[in-house]
Length: 346
Image (cartoon, rainbow, N blue to C red; front, side):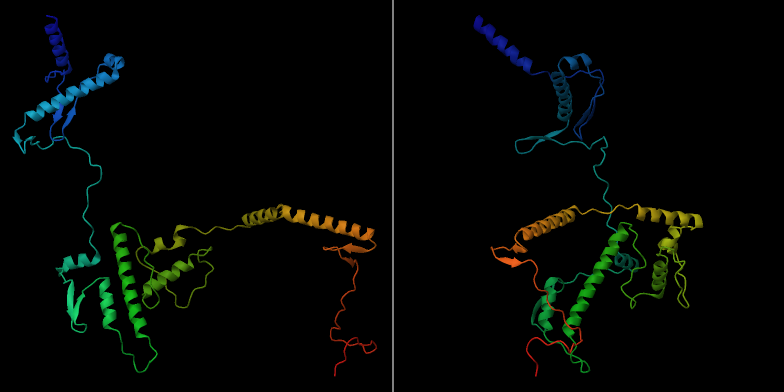
């Protein structure tokens, strides 16, 4: 009888580990099977929460997950490779996006023009046959330049200019074309991001229009401290006009200072006081070096007096304190009464 009693107690303990699949709550939770989301509107028990928080949260989570699993098992199921699969319905609750909706890539100027005119893009072949090289060469890409260099290994020089470097001109044209494409690409990016670009920029006077030159000239004139008041006007000079000229002119954004006699006198006094009250900068290292030099000179003078007018040099040799001075030049003047010393010139 004891053995049967122990088996029944052990079975009862095992059954207590597994709770029933039925869950009863005061308010029915909202279950969105499409997102596998459960929203429980019931208030939590504050006493049980304070008694044992971990156990209370674990039991609450278990009950909500059990409700979600019960809803999933109510869906139609099918067996796929020895597994039971349920097809989830479309979600009900709208979830916020982590990022903004993707926007279509803005069209470039050429794409807008092609769309307006109905121009369709033609697909080009990646390689074409070159009869000069007698082989297939790339239509575009970095390998195209190698093929052109191999093809144009010699270029004709004009007769009137035999020293003209045609290879350099061809290379410069290619670099200019690449730079032009890069500028167009940057302008497209700025236009897509709605970044204001300066309208007065130009490559040089050869490519700039008259309107651009006039605008640039007016901006430079108004960029001085006097906002262009004391700048001389050129003969037949015109003022820049058009939309956005006032925003480009620096003089339109700032006003020139109104100078008065009292204000100018006050500013001059401030400058004088600042100069007069400025303390001299003391170089400590230089002062120490000068003091050391003076002390060394005094010490050498004392040693020279004790040795009878002679000072010691490095190495133990003695030399006179006062040596004969080097004779100065005649500075272009010759004294005929004085006998010349040295070798006579012939």
